[in-house]
Image 1 (cartoon, rainbow, N blue to C red):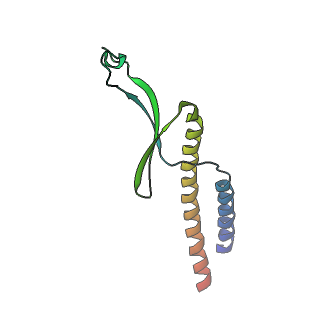
Image 2 (image 1 turned 135 degrees about the horizontal axis):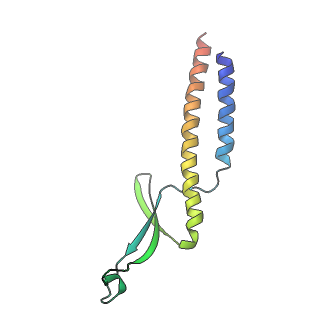
Image 3 (image 1 turned 30 degrees about the horizontal axis):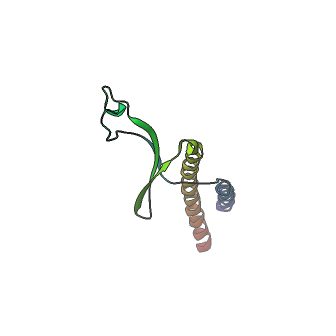
Length: 114
């Protein structure tokens, strides 16, 4: 029974590896939309009601303990959204791979002690 399960786990891991290799460009973080108020007197952003400047798009992320943010051009939004989605997909696939690999390692250890 454990040999059959091990083979199933190995097939699932290989499938995950293929999916990971096909992900494409990735980017960690989250996308936000911002509207700003400038310092010019009489500007529309100071009117009642205010009409703020924007939207401005920004990706924020933390990598290796360092927080960062980058502005994103409106024309780059579709590509950036795809990169963010790819990153989230990669994390899910990696978590699944770790779960499968842990189970497979446990099965192999049990087999070695039999």
